[in-house]
Length: 454
Image (cartoon, rainbow, N blue to C red; front, top):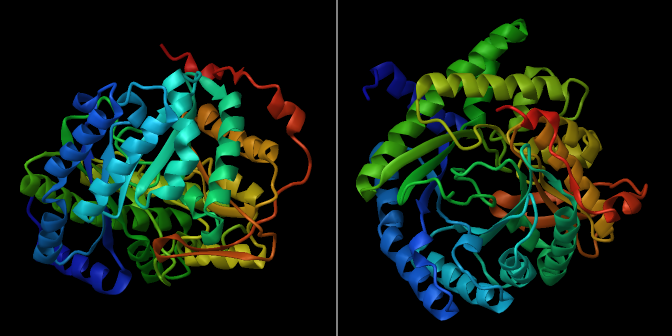
């Protein structure tokens, strides 16, 4: 891949002025050969394989970042879903293996490791139940291990029993980490239609269809996109706005692919994909919400926010796909409330509500992300919120997700403080109209008509 001097200078400007970075280099590791019915043996195999595959990840990531002058913010690992690796229906066994995984992540110096995962969109196995039963303890006692559960897909419909189960798990997890505003729930994502090559936490897992090991890169550049729109001026029409986003996404993708392929070469593994997702941080200028403001909205959540986000997401994908044949993962725009400076301000001002966020998730990359709600919210209401988001994913044949924190002891007007990339968030109001009878019917909402595509 060759770059012109003009492209190099543009990229240097993006790094220096627009906070362009590689949000994560994630090493995917298959654990399928680590399966063993003896938890101690399985733990040892998993620990040793993670260390063997990941021993050079931190060193090589630092080397590549320095070599190319492009910041790499996080080093992460994604694993084969643990429900496919540990063939024992014993919650204690899952806690034991999870402890080994977390220790391996700490020994390697990675920020997060994903794969405490179960797929129950059509129902649970005994092993799934054991993994989920142990989940609150795992999320409360490990520092780096992240969890995800698949509750729905366009092909399967929505597991309503699973939604209710996971709402109770979320509340228990929040309670076990109450001294940190329920931060355990920030490591738990609930999915419809997940992808197997997502490098972003907390929902990353390494799918069964992936190779033995590969590099998955998550590149982020909301500041660079915002600067491109500022350079257009206020007289540009929306077609010109979309074109500017595409061009900016193209440049961001080129930089990310360069890093990803070099990381794969350094580690001697395959290059899996580049996830071109505009992932914000609480830092000023590194915000997806501010892109919407630059388009002309006073704040995220204003009428027109869904249309503006759709255009942004579409233009990002078009620009990225033209720049690389390895674009994958989620690729689009994230709208986490606590992790985006502009979204935090909009939530504080009451400009954005959960209902508006839900509408916006129909056109963004993921879903209801890093939203804090009152700790007193009932499990039934929480399950119904989860089901609504799963429905958007099923009906639109897209990935959607829920990462909500029912903050213990907190109510509307209070704040949660997580720090770092997780930021802070005001407690958002939740409807008090009951969904209890609907949720308690249980069963599975059948797959939509869109599933019949063969």
